[in-house]
Length: 41
Image (cartoon, rainbow, N blue to C red):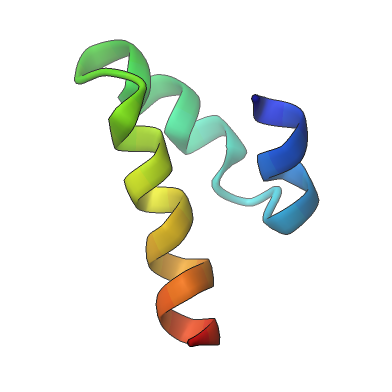
């Protein structure tokens, strides 16, 4: 899970790990798509 995300962006890797533990595993996906998808698309 973390391996594929690191491939796209390694700067948010430690951030999503802490957030998903507090809110859930869906939160890390949101942050992951925000900077990559939003800026890319």
